[in-house]
Amino acid sequence: MKTWDCQIEFIRRPTPFPFHIPLSTAPFFFTGFLVLSSLVAAEDPLPSGGVSLLAGDTVSSFKLMADPAIVAPAEVAPVSGQPFQQALRLRTLARTATPYAVQLHAISAAPVHPGDVLFARFYIRSPESKDDPGSGSTEMVIEQGPPDYKKLVSIGDSAGPAWQECSIRFVATAKNIGGPGIPAGKANILFRLGYGPQIIEIGGVEVLNFGNNVRLEDLPLPTISYPGREPDAPWRKAAEERIEKIRKAGLTVLVRDSAGRPVPGATVSVNMQRHAFGFGSAVAAEMILSQTPDGEKYRETILKYFNKVVMENDLKWNPWEANRQRAIDGVKWLRDHGIAVRGHNLVWPAWCNLPGDLETLKNDPAALRKRVDDHIADEVTAMKGQCVEWDVINELYTNHDLPDTLGRDSIIEWFRLAHQADPAAKLYINDYDTVESGRQNNAHTDAYEETIRYLLDHGAALSGIGIQSHFGWNLPAPAAVLKGLDRFATLGPELEITEHDIDVTDEQLQADYTRDYMTLAFSHPAVTGFLSWGFWEGRHWRPNGAYFRKDWSIKPAGKVWIDLVTNKWWTRASGETDAQGSYKTRGFLGDYEITVTHNGKSRTLRTTLQKNSKPVEAVLE
Image 1 (cartoon, rainbow, N blue to C red):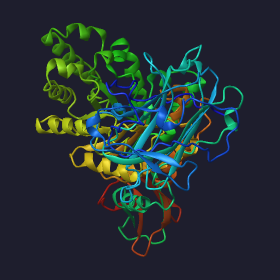
Image 2: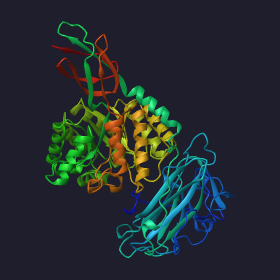
Image 3: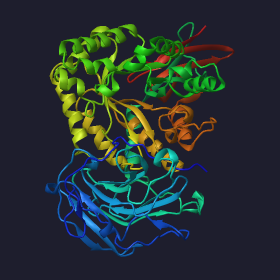
Image 4: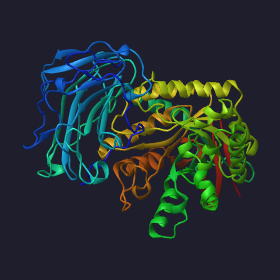
């Protein structure tokens, strides 16, 4: 049994607010309705002996951290038919810059030690979301207090109109809470609520510490889900219809003899060789070049299941300057084996992500500008023809030291220089929090769209928009994700899922959402590729998100990937020509090998199936 270690989040620490108001005496300040239980009762049986981390009932335990200008007063609402009788309801009136801009906050009332087994649960619904399932969101975070803010766990969910249980069992590790543990009063229990205007209710909140008196498997299984997971969810049929329309085309094979006459009854075998759509993963040059059993398995997996990859770290500025030859050799192996490579990234514009000498130049803009420009020209020129695309800018919303210093127009120049160095490479901008929250109205997403429009309006050579797609327990409804993809598709450049992973320990949940998210992306006409951010637990920034375990056994999500990429969305067909010597089928766009046999004669051809492809002619001599 694997234990839940911790949930690494994009936002590493809460933003302090001057407001710290008891819920029992003041309104909540966030953009929706929230309901928190004041009478907790477990629906599933729990072992005895659990010590609550909450000091009292929920209403008296939590305080509000938010700007009072953006929320309506809290309401305590009666609840029936659930294992709790009251809940707190709040209405969020406006969007916020980050999910943690609005938080409910409680201080732990009991200590947590390394090895303690804990259980957290709450219930969520969005009572007015009948026409927009999944429109209400929250996230429970249990973390150390300052200065580290290390996360013990975070669980979130999106909700529809019906009550939905969210729970998780986990083990506190020395890595995440420190060797001696966390004393009472030194951990935060938070609900993050800044997900834009919403109506949301939360009830039945409990956080129990069972110490070392129970095993993890003695506690109920996690119950987190997402709207639209149902087999008959309406979005599925529409997605399948789009896939059939945009990812496939008719394939006609005309068989003739040497005199040009039709050959009826010839056997035609159609076998796909490579998909036109990019299915891939982040990879590490170190593993590609490793002469170890794991290195061999790593290379074998790339060749079997991916037609495109992104270099996870090797082409970033610091690693490039530290060991460019390793990157060059890793990319060469990939290219020699027919794998397309995207470059990640040229500029990650925060001091903490750049070579140390750049910050020393911040008072010398001319020297700083030259240092950046020279780097772009150097790296893209060195890799010319080797990378089909580049992330020119990565995560600008939260990493903006360089444009703050050099001026916003510097980002336009970075695209110009990259295009000048390799005109054939597509140039991307890349960021997170694009569709991950499922919400359209948040500052990060709005800023990403505004930056893209700025680049396009100023003539930047922007070819594509990166949709990172890192998920945790807060999985948005597929219908909400589709709206997010539609939003960015209207801007013009192509879209690519660039860094997908799902960092959860519920392997079936992970598999189901992998299937559904891949299906959504593949069904969208603007999306050209889907890349996971790693595939092997032994080399993954969030090991829970891998498709293969450390021993290379495959996880359910890995099975989903293989089934979709090599089976459901892969064409193998055969049949006989008709009286006119014609054989017709439909196939997924990509490269094919076609073998024709008749009366002991055989002919093998290779072709690329595109929309409106001409018939393939096979002449049997």
